[in-house]
Length: 478
Image (cartoon, rainbow, N blue to C red):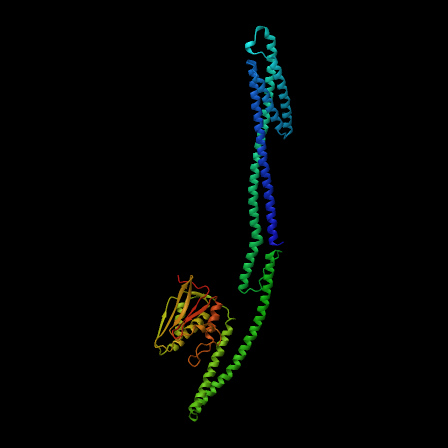
C-alpha cells in the first residue's frame, strides 16, 4: 500500500472515531438536557401540588369564588405536566400511572369537599354531623395530594439520578475523546516513524556509505510504498555504480599499465637523445659552428622538457587512484618546509616573502605539500622579472572557514583567460619566457577537489596574481 493510501486510511479511521465519539458526546449532552427538563417538570408538579393543598386548606376557612378557579388552573398545569413527562423506565411508568390516578381522585375529593365544606364563620352546634363528613373528605384530599407529592418527589429523585448518570456519561465520553485523540497522535507518530522516518534514515545512511565508497551496500527496502520503491531504485543504482566502478577500475589498471609502458618506452629514447647530444657537444664542439651547437642544445632542452612532461602526466593520472590519508596538518610548518625546498629558485634574487596566519587543516600532508610547492613555485617563477619579488602566503576567514592564498607581484595575466589555467597543457605565457609543462595547476586543482575544496584566482596583467583555495575540514587555530 502506498504512503498516500496509508495516510488516507489512517485519516479515515481517525475521522470515523472522532465522529463516533463526538456523536456520543452530543447524544449525552442532549440526554442531560432532557433529564434536566424532566427534573424541572417534576419540581413544577411538586410546586403545583403545594399550591393545591394550600387552596384546599383555605376552603375550610373561608370559601370564595377564586378557590375553584385556582384549583382548576392547578389541575390543568398538572395534566399538562404529566402528559409531557417521558417514560424512560418501567418504574417511571408506574409512578406516572399512580400519580395520574391520585390526581383524578384528588380532583373528585375536592369537588365533594367543596360541596360539603362549611366555613368556620357559618358553623353552629347543629352542623356537627356535616362538619364531620367535611373533615373526613378534607383529610382524604390532603392524603391524596400528599401521595401525589410523594410520587412526584420519587419521580424527581429518579430524574436527578438520571441527570447525574448522564453527566457522568458526558465526563467519561469527554475523557475517552481526549484519550482517543492522544492515541491517534501517538499512533500517527509511531506509524510515521516506522513507515517514513526510519526508511528515510536508512536511505540517508545508505547514501552516506555509498558516497564513502561502499558500493556493495544495499538498502534492502521491502515495503510496497513509495519509500520502498525508492529503496529498490537506490539498490539498482548502487548495483549499476558498482558494475561501472568495476569496469572503471579495470580500465584504470589497463591505463596505468599502458602509461607505465609508454613512459618507460618514451624515456629510453629521450635519454638517448639527451646523452648523444651531450656527447656531440663535448666531443665535436670544435668541429661545429654556433648554429649546430645551438641545435644540439635545443635537442637536449626539448628531450629534458619531454621527460618532465611525462613525469607530470604520470603524476596527474595517478592522483585519482592515490588514497587520501587525512590527518591534522600544521600548515605554517609545511609552508616553511616548502620554501626551504625551493631555495634553488630563490638563489641570487631579491625576494620579500611574508607568511601570515595559516590555520591547521585536516588533509593529506603529502598531497597538500604538492599544492603549496606548485603554487609557491609559480609565484617565484612569474615574478622573476621584478627587481624585488613580493610573495605573500596567508589565509582569510570567510563564512567561518579559512581561505588560503598565495599572492605575488609578478606578470599576472588577463582574467579573460582565467578559465584555461587549470586545464592540462594550458599556458597563458610562452614556453620560451617561462619554463613549465602546463600540468602543475591542473594537479593542484585535482588535489583540492579530492579534499572537497575549490580553487580560484584573481589577477591583472603586469600586476601580479593571487590564488585562493579552500579545504574540507579546515578549521581556525584554537
